[in-house]
Length: 425
Length: 211
Image (cartoon, rainbow over all chains, first blue to last red; front, side, top):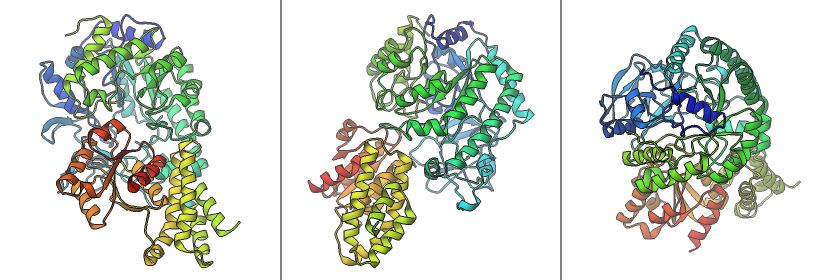
């Protein structure tokens, strides 16, 4: 990894401290929620005239493409990520091999194993075990894998929280070595660093079906999980309680290994907002999630210099006070298109206490379907709102999806550079 | 509390076992199946929708009420068909091609059924030809399309165009919904209506079939 000016990391840290940096730090690719679809990464490489070998898929569920040093420099990014040893489907992110992804050559982990059905749907297997039931499906017409729900019959009398904890456990030495190596390389790069270590997402419905497990047990159906947050709260509490204990022990070992090589930690991606409303009341949030978030965040703040990163899509303004009280420092993706998420109002009410990591441009409408001019105008407006006083890391509202025109992505990046007063590339 | 009061309460609190038992008890007492639906299920689900709209209820509560409503409908539906009772409308619903997200679609389907519609739920990842085939075969007067993804919402337009090409566009009203979908998008692709929530979808559907 090339050494760059230390200013990227300083820039991020300044922004995270709610001070205004020399320019807005820019993130794509440091997490699973600020990523770019592999097809768009390939398009960006071509646009910037970079060597276009197959792009590595670092998150095969959403098919997010790795942003390598040359592209990161071309895009003017400031942040990189540290990821767990294994991907969402349980295969180690290693032994990369070429895979033809519907006409695009990409690199996937050696144990990423798929089967294409007669109708063209692609199935992926947990831990690369083709004898297990597949845990992901990419239908024709889609560009990423949806998790296949494998819900065993539920016997209320026999429900055991341990069944929903199979995917949580002490990190292996191999896992720790991987995180240690990745964090030290990242920490020495001069970029700001986000650590995604896994294990602290409480009830994230993207993970509840356990796509990495061969035979998931417990409550694994997403609708049943939502229902359980209403009808089986004791069960959920016991899962979260134990998950939290495991996570804190793991975090202590991770921190002992990497120290402050990362600037912030991706804590949880559980979505509490919908486009127009919420998945639960604030009261439910405070009863069911708040205590565990607070324990994790308090531990992080007491023992490290990391900031705590919370992702939640949708209309979440009502939760922000509770997020802050629970110890979150950063909110993402700042879905300004959702109800009650007016950017200026968010900045006014929470801007001194929460870092807005995202919110830079809408990915439901403007970026995929707008013109480059519309993209530029929206990006400049958002920067004007969010940048003053720091507390802003530019990223789009969630991952850049397949089909997003490359010229719009470039228009977005150019607009941030224009706002920053830098001529880039 | 009478059976029918129990049924209403069970639907509102999402207790499917009580809903099923109260439905059976009401039928045993001689209450007409159509009365159970129009006089009790529909008002109860309207109340559930109202609570959702005013954010007293959220997705988990809606799922529970939908489950209770289905438990009741499964008992009543065959009797309704035998009695020749006509639904408010007949709707074919599904998530469009390439998109496997179905929680929102399922909630809309449940609310429509609770609103007195006959619902033909085609599931998720539904190609245009299947919507057309089902609408024609079941003589539907309403089609409801759901999409959660920007990469799949284009299939809404493809599906509407396919109805046009098949000569069926004038026979059905088409409503659309899903996180990235807006009224503006619905207008642009030639849909007849857009709803941004399961509760308001019922009111929209009633308006469309009455037009």
